[in-house]
Image (cartoon, rainbow, N blue to C red; front, top):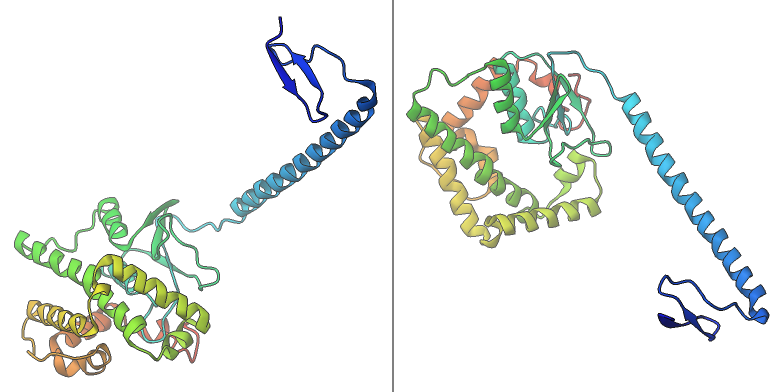
Length: 301
């Protein structure tokens, strides 16, 4: 009994068993052509297979070489990966300054790895900064601090009451998750002159446009990007005032643009400026060695 009837490429109808085996022989006139076709297909298959094996071998070898070249760091030392020293601050990302300041405050031995944009090594979460500690990688500045607090039994808030700790956490979240996006909008969206960004990051205009698009996209989904510049400015002013009030002895004067705020913050919010200066003097005595002075020289630390 025959299972099915199969039509082959040579238009011959031949019975096939249920296992798929041909039950009749191929007509002699076509046998030579079929042999050639099969032989050619096998050669192509072998060639493709060889390419796949070669590519796979290269990938494996690269991974092995990268593992062999992995730099060894001293034990019990935090390795801080960041984007690089900034022109007027020790990093081009505020979260790296936050994390490095914490390491100094807690007196934890650390080593900075300043990756440039071309060779930037991201964390497992695609972010910088991140740390390595005795072979363990930790991403996100806040999670890095939490990890080190637990691992090394550090508590910089032990002198605070639960109420003060709660207020401090609220200010931190406002600053990092809200105020930060105001700065991004002013810098990348509202400021039409991108010369500072281009020169500071040493990138071309095409990359600047990509960064502008990414900020616009991120702030849209975050929510702040849906507001007008005037609305954003008012919210920004209120949050700066709230931060100033929290610090105490604030000057109740507002600002209209980010540039004005940065240029005149000493006059508008003297307590915030004083706080920054105290932190700089206490924990960053080598500040000038950790900046590029407007990109005019290399940072020495």
